[in-house]
Length: 358
Image (cartoon, rainbow, N blue to C red; front, side, top):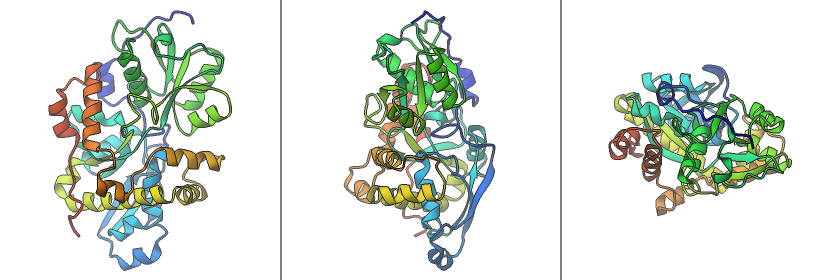
């Protein structure tokens, strides 16, 4: 592995929004509407008067966004009096939408943590599922551990984005400097997982940090071997990867709407937990996600560990507030966040009363 000059991460750039699009990356163009209405549960939609018309960025082709698709398609949003317009939107559009309240809710991962720190109207209200990112190398690569990456080059979708954060946190916690002038690795942004994989195959980079389903498709095809799977490997295995973010502006002005949305998402997660194959078949049939391998899609959906209503009732679901604190402390520890974790948590997580408006 040739020695490559390390580059330092510009924290200020990350905090001004140079981050990736929502979980599974590579989302579509800014706020392009694709679905509007009350989903498949027509009778429920007709019986419940529409109380809110909202926009949800929920058409990004990601398995991470299955709860959004199902909350819409199964009529759970409609049952709450919500007429939803599902749109494609990049990270900047989502951040602006949350901040000004035009998008009351967004499914996302660590990408919004710096925006919360800088004071935007964004807060976590719930966790959705476990990991959907893998770090991968070529099958014959000698790289097996973080130590093996010293002097190496890593492909990410964006400097400061979630795949960057995952790789940096893993490296730093294993004794390899990933951030700052003394960084021992180089990060190269490619903006697309296909481009990252091509860079790996051509020898331009030594490792890729990419999203499912592309990561798992490449693994199953024998094109790569996995060095880190955040759904099963520490320091990520027992923590949420994706969260439900709310606009604090909407939360203050119309808390009943946020409560209603969260109830719909909880119903969708419960359906996924109990019916992972049916849930997967529905989103494939409706072409929300483009993946030819149905069995692999089912395997991934099951592996993400969507919690059921019983999991929440019995305390078996992961604790979203505790997870936000965990990652705030971890990212603060490597210099990615500058706020005191306890002070940060007060802004970054807001509990929601699910009984509001019932």
